[in-house]
Amino acid sequence: MRRIHDMLAVMLLTAFSLLASCTKVDTENSFANTSAGNFAALWTIMDEHYCFFDYKNSEFGLDWDQVYDKYQEYVYEGMGDMALFEVLSSMLSELRDGHVNLYGPYDVSRNWSWKEDYPANYSEEVRDGYLGTDYKIASTGYFYQVLPDNIGYMTIESFSNAISDSKLDAMLHYLCFCNGLIIDIRNNGGGNLDIAEQVASRFTNEKVLTGYTKYKNGPGHNDFSDPVANYVEPAMSNLRWQKPVALLTNRGCFSSANDFTVKMKEMPMVTVFGDRTGGGGGLPMSSELPNGWSVRFSSAPSYDKDMNDIEGGVDPDVFVSMTDSDRLQGIDTIIEAAREWINGLITN
Amino acid sequence: MNRRMMRMKTTVSFRFSELALALMLVPACVRAQEQSAVGVMPAPHQVVSSLSAGVGHTKAMDGFLSPLEYDGTAFSLSEDRVAAIGGEESIFRFLRTHNSLLFSSMKNETGGGSTLQFMADANCMWGWPALHTDIFDLIAGPVAMLDIGALWNRRNSNNPANVEGNLSLGAGADGTLRFRLRSYPMALQGTLFIPLSGIGFAPDYDQPYWIMYTGSQYGRTLHFTHMFNNPSVTCDMALCLPVKNGQVRLGWTADYRTDKLGGNRTRISHNMFNLGYAYRFERKYNGR
Image (cartoon, rainbow over all chains, first blue to last red; front, side, top):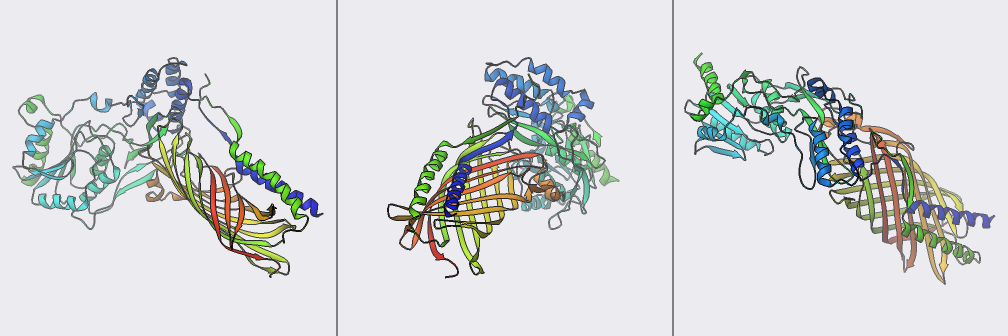
C-alpha cells in the first residue's frame, strides 16, 4: 500500500512539473505577419471596433466589405513596407475620419479633409492684430486681451495644453469688467475632453445636459451600449462667467474642440459664430498590426443632447464667413460679428 | 484570400529549459523514494514561512490594448506560508497562503511597442491531509485567489492601460516529498492552484474607463468567471535545502491566466525562477 502511495506521489510531482513547464495552451485568432495578414488584420480591427460605419454609409455610401474587395487586389506577398503602408493608408482614407491614423516607421497616415476641403475662416496674422503685443498669456495657447470696446477676447488654441483652475480664475477675474467675452477656438484641433469640460464649467450656474456617448460593446457594426448622458457641472468653487459669450468656430475645430462647442451651445448666454466645426465626434482607441504598426480609430460615438451625431461637425448659431477684403485690411469678419452682437446686447 | 484570415489554432507548447528541469527532478524523486524506504527521514508535516525573490519571463496579450503578444522580463517578491491551524487527533488542517508582487517590462515581437505590468496576488488555501507516507505529504482543499494588477501599453494614447482583476474560488494541492541526496536531507515541494469560479473585472469590449465610472456603467465590468471563460493554473515547485534552522528554497513558479470577458481575450503567463529563505520552519505532527 505504501509503495502505491509513493508511486502516486512521484506521479503527482511529475504532473506538477509538466504543468509548470507548460507556457501556452490557447485557442486564438491570429494573423500572420505578411502583407496579406497585416491587410486582413487592419481590415478586421476596423470592422470589429470602428464605430461610424452606419453613419458614414448614410453620409456618403461607405461599404466596408467593398473597401476590402477594392484594396485587397493591391496586396501581394513580397511587397515592400512603403507600398503596403500606401495601400493600408488608402484603405483607411475611405473612412474620411480625422481620428483614423496608421502609424508606420516612415509616416503617419491621416485624413484632414474635414479642414482642408473648406475655407479657413481664420488668419492667425489677422487674429494677432486683435491681440496686439501686450496680451496676457494664461497658459500655452490661452491668450487674452481686452478689446477697445471693452469686450474680452481669449483664444484657446488647443485642449492638449492643461490650464489650472487658478489660471482660469485669474483670466476671468482680469476680464470681469468687460461687457462680454469672445472665446476664439478656431483651428483648435482638440486634445483632452476633461480640459474642454473644465473650461465649459465656468459658463453655467447649474448642471447642464450637453449630450450623450455610446461605446462599442461587441464586434458587430451596430453593437453599441445604451447612451451615457454627459453633463457639465458648474465650477462651484471657482469664478464663473455671467455675461454674454461669443464662441468662434471654424472647420479647424476638431475632436474635443468639437465637443467643447457642443457643450457651450447648451450654456446660457453663449452664441456660436463662424463656420461649422470639423467634427471628430468619436473617442479614439488604438490597436496594433502583426508587423508592429499602430492604428488609431474612432471607437465611441458622441451625440448632442438631441442625439444628433456630431461626427460631421456642429453648426454655429450664426454662420459668418471671413471675407478676403476684410482679411486684407486686417479685419476678422467673425470677430467683428461677435463684437457687434455683444455691443448690440449692451445697447438694447 | 479568406476575408478575415482567421486561423483558429490550438497549441500546447513547453518551455524546454523548464521541461528539462522537470524531467531531471523525476529521477531524483524516485531515488528519494528508494532511500526513504529504509526510514531515514521522519514523516512530519512541514510548516514553512518563506520569502523569495524571483526573476523570469512573462508573456501578456490583452485584447483591450492590443491583439499582439508582448513578452519580457519579470521580477517578483513573494511570501509563502503553510501553517497548521488545528485539528482533531491525527487530522490536521492547514492554511497555506501565498502573496506576491510582480513587475515586468515587455515588448512586442516587432519591438515597436512596450508594455509594463504590475501584479499583486494573494492566494489562500484551506487544506486537509490527502495523502501521507514516510516520504510524501499531500494537502488539498479549496483556495481563494485574488489577482489584481494593470498593464500599461506605453504606445497607446486613448486606451493606454487596462486593469486586471480576479477574485476566484478554486482547488489547490500542496505536496512535499522528502528525500536525501547522499546524507543531506532535502525536500521538494510542489503546489497547484486552479481557479474554478469567481468574479473577474474586464471592460465591456471597447468601454472607455471614464464611462465605467462617471457613466455609472461599472456594473458591466464585473463578470462571472468559470473554467470555460477563465481557465487558469498556477504551479510552484521548490527544492528546499536545510541550512541551520531554516531552509534555502530554489524553485520556479509558473502561472498561466487566460480569460475572455466582455468580448476581450486576455492571456498572461509567467515563468519565474525563485531564490528564497524560509525564515520560520517548524515540524508538527499529530499536535506534537
